[in-house]
Length: 312
Image 1 (cartoon, one colour):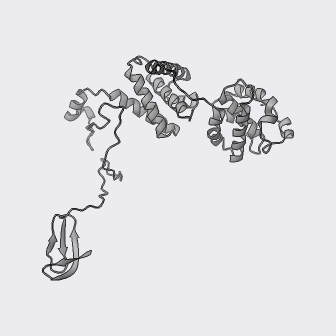
Image 2 (cartoon, one colour):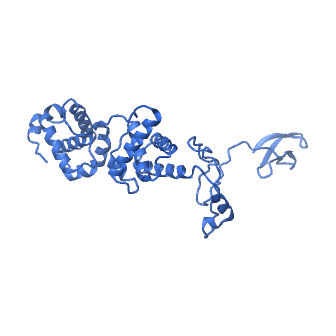
Image 3 (cartoon, helix red, strand yellow):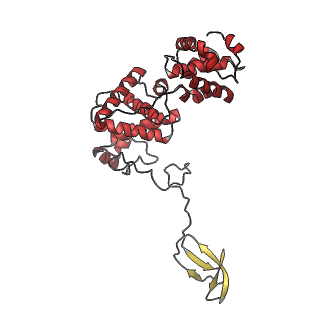
């Protein structure tokens, strides 16, 4: 309640707001002091289809410049409580008869969004993957190819370009059945198409073993001190001519660091967490072993501990 001057009472009285009618009424004599007033406060009302949804959002999603209509077209949804199929609705049938040039793109973007969510990727990587797929789709040369592998490869390239690389095995785990070999072929195809379009080589971003340390360490439950030691070790390993992939070096260093700690991890657990075969970790360990005194930080392990380190 608030105070306002009433012309009948000839004084300032308390007034009552009738929000349904928009009237301001004097509490003493009942005179309507103001009618059809506009309530400028926020209206937190739910407009969702589901009764249990308390989301008070009144607007749709943001516009998408990759779509023809900006992603702002209207889609007639299935009415609540209807058990029949969506296409049995007259409006639904008419809408489906119309040609939507972005239908395949929308489905592809939804698939990329699902894969990104399952991998815990940020929105910038998802948007970059959408842009890459849009460029490939515009060339009309990907028809007949495995679309799941194409989408997974777009996400893999986007991770590389945003300096947040994921292993092919990690991408493969969310790729709807696409194999590592298919994703690898799709990646080479996409890079070739992008180079033809831009007329220059595609920057993919270099992969370093340190890019995977914190994530792999989290999978294994390593301490912050152990992760820090592993990160320093892989950085020093780049000074030596160790002809192994960054992922293999990362897996081997993680195994070494955990063996030097109180929380030792078996080779099988390291293999599962990193996606690197046990045999590959063993071979990488042999390549790293001669350089361990210079690779492992002195604050983490002394030389005597390194000599007592057993091969997996």
